[in-house]
Image 1 (cartoon, rainbow, N blue to C red):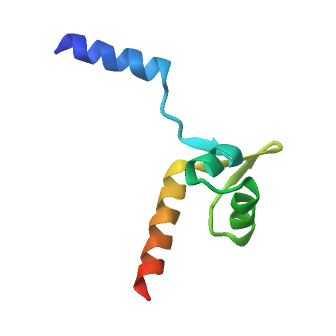
Image 2: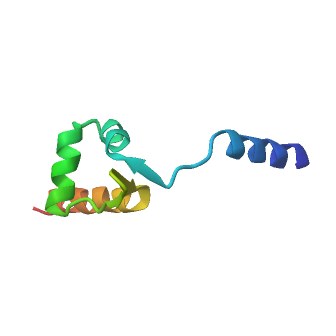
Length: 76
């Protein structure tokens, strides 16, 4: 039990869970081009923040957006 807890701590330290992703990482996750992600951000479909010159997308909002798109797609 304690060994399992320590192993989880080590895994979390070595591979931290990311809360934000870049445009490139989001494009790879969704299997689309970076331009598509940037267009969705411009249209307001995907919510993003700008930190300096870098555009950062919150993973939770990205997942919520995908759920909304799926529900709209199958509603017709």
